[in-house]
Length: 243
Image 1 (cartoon, one colour):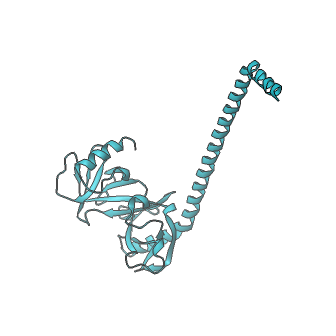
Image 2 (cartoon, rainbow, N blue to C red; image 1 turned 45 degrees about the vertical axis):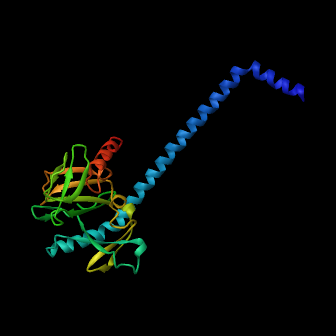
Image 3 (cartoon, rainbow, N blue to C red; image 1 turned 120 degrees about the vertical axis):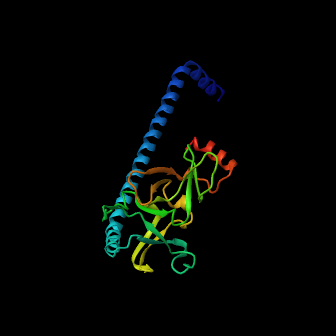
């Protein structure tokens, strides 16, 4: 037994360079295989994401367009969808089923069909003027929404604007254009409507009211303050450098 162990040690000393070369080759091969697996996994994940989005759009687009066109023909501009949080289905609707406005666009008074939908989601809007709110924005893209007419150091006030959100298809668990709430179809959503940061894509768009095509500011909800404070502003300002 001792002679056998001594033979192994002698072999290791005599072939140390060869052994290290084999170890490096195995390590490099494992690294390459890992990268290839990761690339293929990301490719398959993205392929499935594209397929799922296209499939969902095909399912919802025709009924959604018919609904919008019908409302538009009846001269209804504020075209709404009712959001129901999936956990409240089917009966717990006392604090649910609220109306959310589609971002429906017109050109010279004519409806631009499918302007409210793209390959990954559906666009909704909120009229800040109707809510008597203003959006305050600084040079770093940090913003918050509150009642207007006030001044905050480092922030510029934008009033009479529309805020546009994109609801990804992945956040819509299902939809119903037949069993309506107050004549409006229902989207069963993954998160409660009040949880905007989880429900909507993080990119918001601030637009003029009425919808002026020449005014558009892109915002990032990850840079939004719930309310203004100097400490909160400084913290978000430092954090925003990594977004």
